[in-house]
Amino acid sequence: MPLVRPLWAALLDLAAERDCGGCGRPQPSGEPLCPGCDDLLADGGPWRTLAAVPGTPRTHAVSRYEDPVRTMLIGYKERGRTDLRRVLGRALARAVAQTLDDAHTFPAAGGGRADRRVALVPMPSQRKAVRERGADTTARLARTAARTLREVGVPVHAVPALCHARAVEDQAGLSHDQRRQNLSGALRARRISAVAASSVVLVDDISTSGASLAEAARALRVVGVPVLGAATIAAARVRA
Ligand SMILES: [Zn+2]
Image 1 (cartoon, helix red, strand yellow):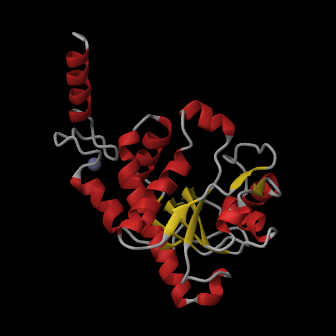
Image 2 (tube, helix red, strand yellow):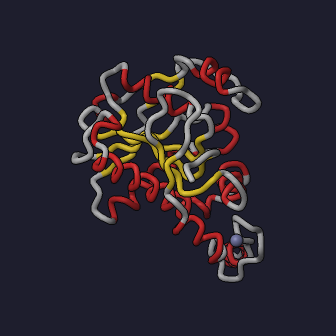
């Protein structure tokens, strides 16, 4: 027992002294982000993203993929900043809400219906990444975003309905065409009954070329599940 109290105190101190997960400035409040960085996620966008790959679903993001949001995402995924999950999940929820709004406005765009239960389908993480990170960070963001939306009355649940059908190369450094080839047939749908009656929104942390989202939409389409759209926190390219 004598150890418990000092350890607990040390953990509280660690939490209190954390720097802002975006700009890195000392954060005396103990909140994961300073007010300026928090505003970027709470007020940014959402913007339509520009996809380079045909077949990419209509996608919205709340930020360009640049600092400080880039640092937040790396901190959350690679550096153990699990305290960023709530704010990042909330940002993802805003992007999802915009995609759902868009589907109401342009019902033909997504190939799904916007007036029924919504399933957030996270892009599957590589098994190696899950092992190294100790968690499937994208699936966790999807669950947090779903919870955020349920709190405001949207009937939504997160369903990990995609998995890898085969190994793929790291996408970094590949051209758009190479990315599309690398990912062609790489994903497979599962738990189809859990999403079949829902409007499906794909979710991921970042969209770059759109190749992963296009492959995900294909994998679901071939089992008869249309994708309404997609949402990410950040995007390499957004419409001005
Ligand atoms: Zn900051």
